[in-house]
Image (tube, rainbow, N blue to C red; front, side, top):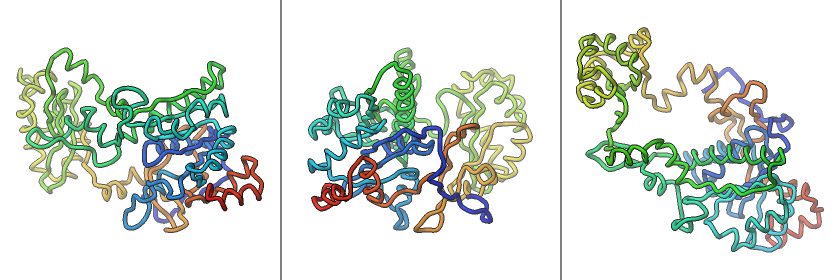
Length: 408
């Protein structure tokens, strides 16, 4: 965390980020859509969470009884409650659409059309609107209408079967990895679409963002490798099918380090550091391909060296030799690490309930147009009246929406 003597980051609604003037309506739920709008909000977009009366389910992901996921992923956003089962709420939404730049949704494909809020309707209300449609499998294809949480696509993409050890079951990531990757892709696509629109190349358009394609893309050349070799790669734990040495090694004090010697020069430097210069000229270890073929022998030699040294001693010796080794951290280690503290990777942010909350800093860091801390995560419906007023609703109209249950 940050230095305990420093004050937490204070939100300032008056600061302006590089996306100032971009208005985003985010109807999505849980992680992927919230990741899209988080990136946009962090850099100054006015993100409006359009929530049902029950709120975004992300609010109910609790730890220690606190909505810490919401506090992190809903920063720099506002909240309005509209019950879109009511026509008055749909009409209010379309009035918001008229002055919006971006519309994010993650309903099952076809649902938005069933609600009479499909892209044709939205573009009629605002031809310049960028519509981001987040789904598990995409808006087209045989699986389009299936429900698609990240867990399913992390399995179907081939990601899970590449993770873990060969004698055990495939391993799913312990967090919403597919959603987060999709969110980053979605934010990039949104800014690209805005750039194209503002350059006059097009007006509004639809971004079809699938979690399956997002997580599949991180597998890189897997399809090409399979087509060329016909082989399905086996799980290798923390090792690698493509480079060696690369693994996690246990030190004498029970701590672990991670090592990557993926270049020839680094592998040779490592062998010298562990006192195994004989391996440099051994044909079994002469090239990366040779080392991959004899990976158990490489790991045996490297692991034996680490097993006789504490983590701190091993890190010192490896870093002195400029070998690429790092400690395997828990979150407890990370929050106490001087680099995490000194660089502000984790920052303390003011919080109305808890006083302050640590969370990841705005990423990435732009030298001239950095991200901004404008608003804390909103209470459910906190900005309903203000947002409706901005859309031209007077007090009487807002009161009528509330009385009918269309807004809250």
